[in-house]
Length: 77
Image 1: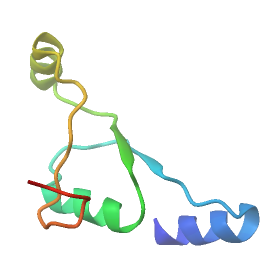
Image 2 (image 1 turned 30 degrees about the vertical axis):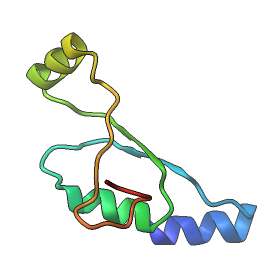
Image 3 (image 1 turned 120 degrees about the vertical axis):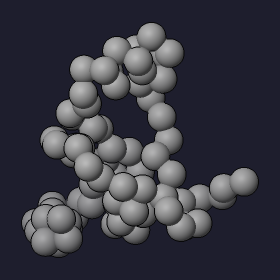
């Protein structure tokens, strides 16, 4: 990911603030910290199990804050 950021910065003077995680199965809250450290502010998770999707749709919780395992993602209480 950092190579991609370096390329975009060099060629277009642009650093993305959003990301797309095509296969989100098995990732931990540590991933949220790594993305935050790279400047990613929003992340689209492109793969949820059918059960998880149905539950989140029913609970109206498809949008959520994926909290990092360490306190470096803004101000947490």
